[in-house]
Length: 580
Image (cartoon, rainbow, N blue to C red; front, side, top):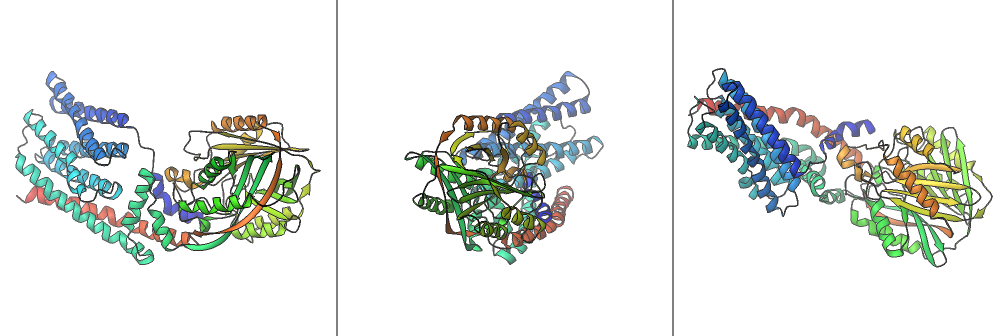
């Protein structure tokens, strides 16, 4: 299954951080000058004239600046970076094709400059059209706005002609722009053909076009748009699942909370439950004025919530649980290990907070079936039990019925409990700026009784064994310390399906959080409460069905789309060269 996801979702790896507008303009200037100077020296040798002609290519920067500024203004400057980057890509396409055309002209094929300049300008029109129409959602305005950069390119071509840069090439201004319009029509027909081909699989399986799905993905990447949630909701399932909360109090005030919903924080970006670790903590922190750490419960991709708004359901249940149950001022710590499978946690008032891992062996999703089985077994020894997936060693998924399942079940049955001591707890959070960490940042909780336990929680997708080992070895003075991740797919939009922690600079932030949590230690009382709620999720096998469909689509696209575009370029060449 993971292999299929890797093959299918490789396209998410093209999502990357867009450079700033200033950087784009700097890149544009460098590209323009390099192209102009190289060609002028090649065509005219080293001279004052060739230097002047080469430097004149700097005006191509305006072919990026003007259309990018206009399109950004129409969108209220919300997509400025993406518009400028589109302009940079357009410039690169034009310069590449123009260079090819100039080479043809240099070797005796006179019309080469014009032909390749027109074709590249039409391709740039298509690039802008796709971005403006599908990503920026400007619809009919796209037809006109997409013309700005291609037209500026042709004006630059005329400027070259006037300055004698293209001698002895002969062409008229009217024919130049007419040929551009004809070539644009050809490529729009190609785009229509592509749309017809790629829409078939998703129309058949989901009743929605692949173009619409792609548009939704672009909207998510560009601006955090959540239109894809409407597609998810069409085939969603209503399920019953659990949420547990460990609340700590000093007097009548809350000192902190640990929240464990049995849902999966996916599928990606801000969609569905991807940002739940942040949204849940943000809401509860504002309402109760205390730190909140959200952990990963037992759930796989089938339990991805279809709507970010459904976080309110979890928050409402947590608020209800806080009103129930009795607090205890004493804590016992729990530990067991069978083979590579381990369980560690604590007991408050006869209720257990159990965290599971196989690290440094693979520790990925503990699915809901395995989670419910582990909890059911734990209820033989405790009046309530919370199942937490540490999700802290990148590898394969833990499936119900596997050897991992058997080991984890035995580890529950052989849990050893320490003598109880007076409970102290400390919380801390450190914000980090990293593509591997989501909005909930890095958090730590330290619990003290007769022993000292430390949980370090990253709002991240997972971590490598090497990263985990280095972090654990950097934290001293505890009977137990381990790294946890939320498995948040918020961080997966840029890096594809997997984005584990590897950046060792984050270790310093984690150590800082632990130090602050130790400084925050204070005597508290605590209680553990568990409740159920209903929520719409992607559902069993829906992820597999979607992935399978996308896999078939990509297989078609890789063959058909290049063929259609090559056909379009060939048709354009024939018309531009032989039809007068």
